[in-house]
Length: 197
Image (cartoon, rainbow, N blue to C red; front, side, top):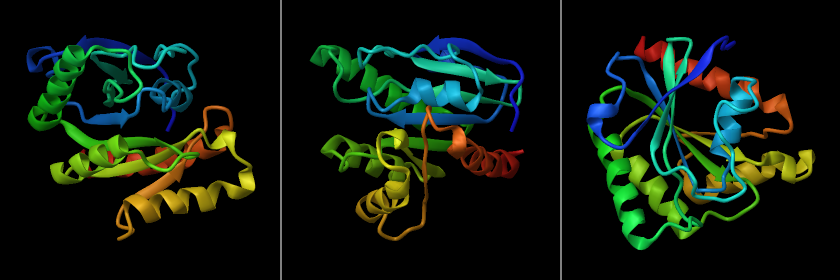
């Protein structure tokens, strides 16, 4: 898919701020340092559409990015590693949960996990939560450039064995450095946009 004019739309913390145009929403979930902003920038071939930070936990609102008025990429605040206070974490957690429970426009949840590491307790909690929403989910094993290209498939398989032994979800590698995985991700996303169109 070629996105010609991706635009940042709004940072929201409550339902009244969500875009109300009915466009499908593809939601990104993952740890604070898993590379969600880089994922967005790589998908749309832009360097600075989504702001990346060397300090995990900078995203504390729900960021909506309009993709050529066809759909939104929605970046949820990351979990773990953040320097947020406990009070801030509870507040952010509550509006993430509110969004996932109240938005009627979600077409797909993309769960990003670091390909190099065994899923943490927080990863497993988030995966279980997504599973219970009954929303479609695609799992992205990010930072694939950090390991040898010959080992990527086995690492992805290992993550699936841990999180999804039934093998009923698609797990794909991704790298903002190696662009070779981008087309496969778009192919999966397009399936869900077609289903909901």
